[in-house]
Length: 89
Image (cartoon, rainbow, N blue to C red; front, side, top):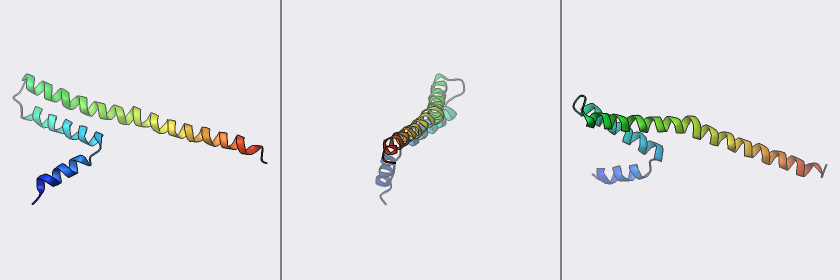
C-alpha cells in the first residue's frame, strides 16, 4: 500500500490551523511521555499551551474581526450603490 504517499498527500491538504493543532497535540504527547518535572516536559507543555492559545486567540479575535470587517465593507458598498442609484429614481 502507499500509506506514506497518502499521509504526505493528506498533510499537504491541511490548513495552517490544522497543522498547528497537530503540532500542539504532538507536543502534549511529548510532555506526557517525558519524565516528571523535567525541563523537556516543561518545554513541550509550553509549546502545547502556546499552540492552543494561539489558535483560540485567532478564532476569538482575528476571525471575528475579519468577519465583521467583511460585513462592514458589504454594508458600505450597499450604501454607496444606494446613493449612486438614487439619482436615477
